[in-house]
Length: 102
Image (tube, rainbow, N blue to C red):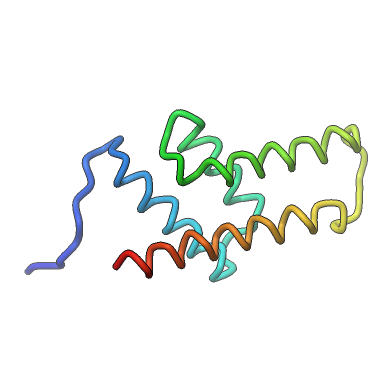
């Protein structure tokens, strides 16, 4: 049975780009949080991977900065609301770019 799935070689740029878009779709479907997406990009794509993930990785650094400013003390969710909004905007851009290139 043919599934018409695209095969991406392990570690390929194309595979990384598709993974970034899949994770962006998961965020937009609200199955992961904005922070989950940026942490995933930082851990699995890294600065050495596809430039498509660069903004997500930079936003993960912004979350880390917000944590450092609060020095581990509890803070309200509004402290990261602007970062969350930027991550959601970036996810929309990534998913939109995929739709435009299809």
